[in-house]
Amino acid sequence: MPIDESDKPERGRLPDEVFWLIGTLGLVLPFVAVALGALGFWRLLSDDWSGWLLLVVSGGLFALDVGIDVWMANPNNSMSDVPDLNRPGAQYIGRVAALTSAIDAGRGKVRLGDTVWVVEGPDMAVGERVRVVGVDGVVLRVEAASSDAGDNA
Image (tube, rainbow, N blue to C red; front, side, top):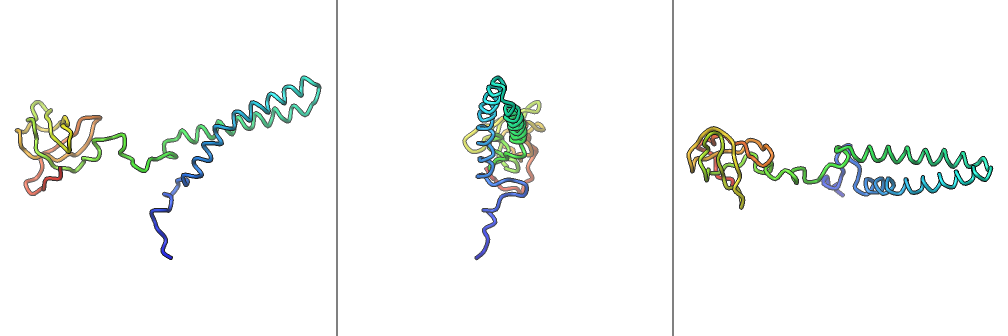
């Protein structure tokens, strides 16, 4: 039976089920640690020295929770399946389109899909073809497209 490569997790990335299990553990641990710490403190007030053990375990659980929280906050551990999701202009890099507004003093406009984008690049006239080479926030960086490039818009 052939192995489907798309089902295998990326190198260094945990499967989603394990990631969510660790995340849930990070949410539950502080409550367990507080409960054990309170029980340990109550036992110490009752002159029961086993309360120290509960306080140590409680401290260990808090330390484990902090470790999980720091690990989960690392962006490399929670990479998206759609890396350009919050960078809408990045999907247009390499596309060729005609200018809808001349680039004057370094700024103009181009229509890609159903959106008119502000572009930056060398001065060009309306209708000239440009290729998207980069993105800076909501501004697309463009350059003149070669004459043999097809319209990818």
